[in-house]
Length: 411
Image 1 (cartoon, helix red, strand yellow):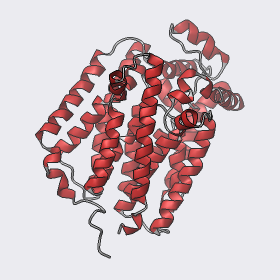
Image 2 (tube, one colour):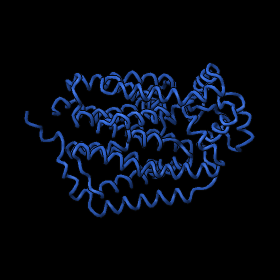
Image 3 (tube, rainbow, N blue to C red):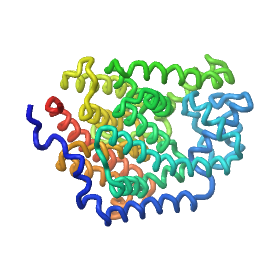
Image 4 (cartoon, one colour):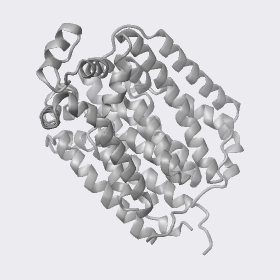
């Protein structure tokens, strides 16, 4: 069958003016900006300290899901938020590693690692695309890395100590594992992304639709269970799981996790329909929807048990990333997970690439839009940023879905 002209692009297309010197310079400026931020940031963060603190409790034979977490947390940190520890027990290894350092040192190591995660993600994605015969020149890769570095949410992630960049690295490994058919890379990726269950579990559900990924899913599940054992021993298996789920049920009750400050479907439901959907409900919905979406993609392409070809694998990853970003209960800083889509679209026509890139530009610096509109109140600005992110996600999901409707033409 003759290939449609606008189905995908030639791999040499990235040698044109799109990646010439001006954009390379922008990328380098962005990378330098990232390095400066990592070096310049000082003082207590907002999120990483809870990961470090939980590790300290685990090392002392206590549990971050018990009452001692609240009691000691208020004494140790002046800015303790009073919320339960929402991270699952499989964080034990990472938390205890950082708790072996003093808090300030651990925080600095975490920020440097976050910068490494960004750079590593680009290398990993490029390696996956090269496996498919897509050769991106160095200018294109520098520009992509620079874009991520100057996103408004990137310094926010670094300042607050969020885990979003670790999950971003996991998603890059996931893409590499699937596109290059590397089973153990895929296993490692799944172990990382399940650290944030509302992202990892739905993507695992999507891979259930494909028999060739079942062993990787099984390996990742076994490794994750093994990693939780020390945490379960510290607080007792039943008590740890019960207290973790009890704390998790309060997730939506805090202002930072309110629908107005969340992105995607949760934001749409509150702002348009005045419906407050819980994080647990939307996580469950995303699990079912990602499995259904994967089955739909599988059926439309007639994959059956055959090996996925490159374009089919790419469209699966694009659809899955955008769908999880839209349905799962997330925040603006989590939207860095959408960035790999920019490189994945290089397999498609210029029209689709340009549409996705323009939509992504909305996600770059939404705070600047708020400033232009004279929105300076902190709470109002954050709610506005969530709306901008949600708008971009919605448009991206629509155009990605339209593109996926044409996947039967991919040979």
